[in-house]
Image (cartoon, helix red, strand yellow):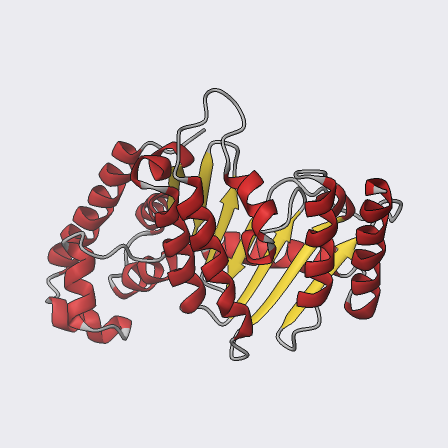
Length: 285
């Protein structure tokens, strides 16, 4: 179920108050607790006042430093895991302008070194040619919110400059269906496949494709992106979920590597994309 913003805010407030109460009950000052946790006193203060959301690992360190009983610690860790899940609907993004989402993604990419994209349904925006981007950002059903498509498309195209930053690495893993799903015109599909083959030759980019007919011991259920080892974004029809629990991150990294081990990569992936582009071009003629 979507996570209601009101519930998120309440749980984060409850977590901050509980940690502050436990610290006071222990008789420790913020400075002493910070020393025990190897954190700054400023960070402890921000956590206790709700100005900073602690990670699950932060909460574990604080609870250990305070010698909190297991049953209390378990409950607070569950609360911390729930508090570290964000949900944002596409409708909410549309209200402020989808180009703001592109700016948010650009900032996230600029603060990350290794990005892993799992794409069972469709190529990601960093790989789009313009016509394909127009199709994917345009409303598709009557209930879709209105949006400034032109501005959102330009923001998406501007984001792609980061692929030339060789200090960052990108791995894009797609199913054959994601490559071949005709989301745009035949001409755009051919251009899209050719473009991905070209991007795959960048020194800091790897594209993997696991083809149909290969047995894979897993089910590709959701689009997700792992940024370094600090957060995962998961796309839904209605919006996006952000996960920060280390256990969730580890699980998604493991899934990515499982699927990657069955994929075509390197020249084999480029050849697959070029052949698919040729298939679309023959359909035009």
